[in-house]
Length: 362
Ligand SMILES: Cc1cc2nc3c(=O)[nH]c(=O)nc-3n(C[C@H](O)[C@H](O)[C@H](O)COP(=O)(O)O)c2cc1C
Image (cartoon, rainbow, N blue to C red; front, side, top):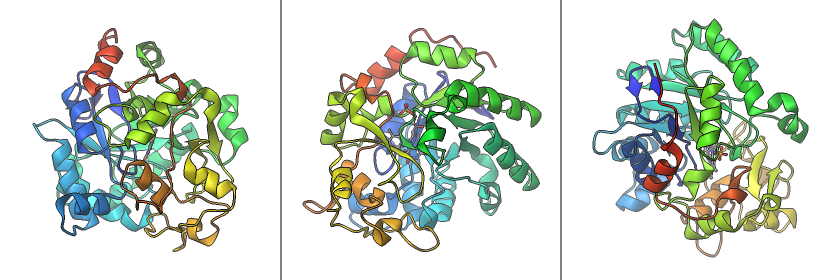
């Protein structure tokens, strides 16, 4: 897989998983196994401060985690969600301070990313990879980025089977045939071609090596996978979260809209997540104490606790980093989580996935 000057032996990107799930141990293990590991920047100020026993800023925390993820000279990417407005800018600058091989940015449109990156003296060393869910979004983004003097170095095309936030507004849009990964990948390939061609990475519902080969045949340069890496030994999800993934079945998973995520995007979860159940019952006590997700200066998780769950507290808790006895877990998974039947090491998973992958030609 070639992304600008970044070459990986295997066409697998481990997707960023926040809060606190894809940290340096997972990203480093994936990159050492020949893929591209990704840390999530979400909540790193708290997570790294706790680990080091001293207060570090968002920017410093992003730089520290990036360096740790690249330990041993391997490259790693940093996933930075647009929706986390209060820490977005510092996370981007910190990732570049730490020498990130790439910044992957979605959960909103990263329209201003090239301008922001250009304010850093080393900004042009980091590959920029937006996440999109339609050809229309990719075209809009390319036009905007072109005016700022940069095009995407690659783009993740994320379909409706992915874990985390989904790039549509309604359940009907998520389920529409036009939204299928194959269809949006074809649209995005046309758009990428019209801007001089850059590699596309297909994401959402990629489970085994046949899925990977199929995506490469359809023209993707690689795939991004989340759920399979969530249930690895090296992921920083709590043991309870990993076991919930192993135990779940297809019917235990749903796309939550109302009640839903304060980001305002559909969010795929395990229906049995304690925080989702509390929210449904109108019994959610803990209001967000972190405030990473602010829309117009307000956290919807605080404004309307019966309509929105709190992804800050819920996801921190699912990573074993919540306030004991106060925060309830919120588990986000991909649509194929029901097929995961054991917790594996990254090495074994990469061997399973890469055994027969068609070698890449540049
Ligand atoms: C637990 C979990 C957390 C995630 N968190 C993020 C995130 O913070 N930012 C993001 O852009 N995508 C996030 N995603 C999406 C993944 O990076 C990836 O694109 C997606 O899960 C791919 O679909 P799959 O799970 O079917 O492989 C998350 C996914 C999961 C399962």
